[in-house]
Length: 67
Image (cartoon, rainbow, N blue to C red; front, side, top):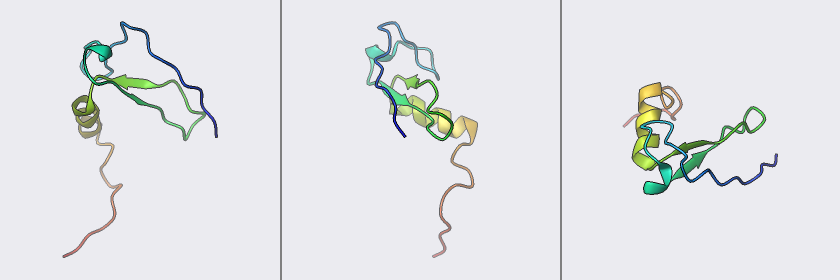
C-alpha cells in the first residue's frame, strides 16, 4: 500500500470546525482501507477527537476489559 504526500492549500479549512488548519496544529487523516482516498484535515487534535466522538467512530472498536 502506498500513498503520496500532499501539502494542503494555505487556506485549507478544518473538516470539523471550519477554521484554517495552518492557524493551529494541523493533522492529516487518510482512510487507507479503501484506496487511500483524499486526506481529511483537522486544525488540531481536539477537532479530530470531537469528530471521532460525534461520529461514534470508536464505539465497539476497543478490546474488552473487565476488572
